[in-house]
Image 1: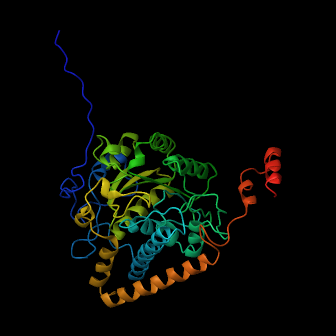
Image 2: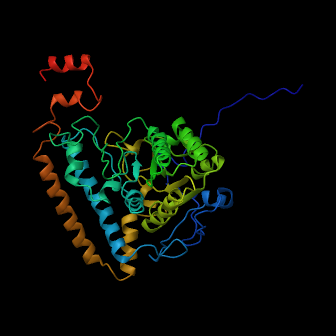
Image 3: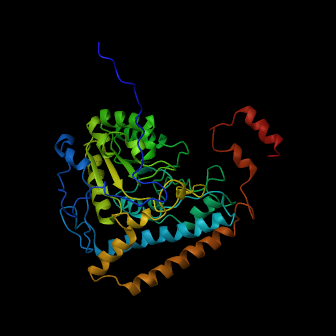
Length: 410
C-alpha cells in the first residue's frame, strides 16, 4: 500500500498585491476584428472557442473593423458617447454628494460605462432588465430622468420608491429596469423566471440578467443556468467581469473554468466574451444575443471583459487589495476615450466638440441635482412619509399592520 501525501488546499491569489507592479499579461486579447461572427442560430458546441476569445471591433487606431462592425450610424455613435459621458458626470456629482453627507451610499460605473449604455440600445420597449448596482447606464441610455434617479439616491420626499430601497437601487417598469436585489445573484433566477413567463404567455418580450464576476460563485447563478438551458428561456445572461469583487480578484469566483463565459458551455448555452470597453462590440454582441432570444433559440451567456476603475462602493478602499496604478495599465483602455477617438477618426467629432459636450453635460447634471435637492437630501429637507413604510407590500393590508400604522399616527 502506497502511503498517500498530506492533502493541501489551493487558494487562488491575484498576480500582484498593493505596492507591486500591475500585470495583465495573463489577459489574452484577440486582435480587433479577428473573431468571427457566427449565424444567430449556430449551435453552442460549434462556437465553443468564442467563450475563450474576446470580440473586439475598435482597433488601436480607432477604426471599426471585422464582421461585428458596421451596425451603428454616426448619429447613434454620437448619442452613445453622450450617454457614457452623462453617466460619468452623474457619477462624479453623486460621489461628491455622498462625501458631503447628502446620501448614505453610492457606487460608481467608472470604466464600465459602455457595457450598460450600449446594451440598452439593443433592447426593445417592454423588455426587462434584472440588473446589479452598476447598470445605471440602462436608464441613462433610455432617457430616464436624472432628477428621478437623484431623488431616489437622496431618499427625499420625491423619491419614486418612497425611501424603501437603498440608494442607487432604482426601479422603473416603464424603462425595463427591475428593482435591484441587495442580496446578490437573486436577480439571475428572477430574470430567467420572468423570461419563462413571457414565453408561457406567448409574449414577445425578452429578459436580460446581470451579475458581477464575484456573484457567479453564488448558487443562484448556477440554478438560473439550469432553468434557462432546460426550458430555452428567452433571456440574455450577462456577466460583467470587472476583475474585482469588493475585495477579491475574479479568479476566486472563476475557479478552474478559465473564463466566466465557459461556465455556459457545461449547460449547452452559447457563450461569448466581448471587450466591455468597446461600445461597438458590446452593441453588436447584445444584438446577436437578443435576436437569439426573440427567435426562440434560447439563452446566451455573455461575459464583458472590463475593469472597475473606482472603488467597489463609497464604503470600500481598493488600495487595500490592489495596486493604486493598476487601472492605468488596463490593456482595453477607457470606453469613453476609445469611442471619442473613433468618432474623430471618422471625421464626425473633434477635441473642441468634446470639450463643449463635457461642459453641456455637466450643466445638465448640475441642473438636475439642484432640482432634486429642492425636495431634500438625506439629512435636510423633505422626506417620505412614515405611512409609506406600510404601503406596497400586501394587496390588502393585514390587521396587525393596520394596528401598527395607527399606533404610528397614520
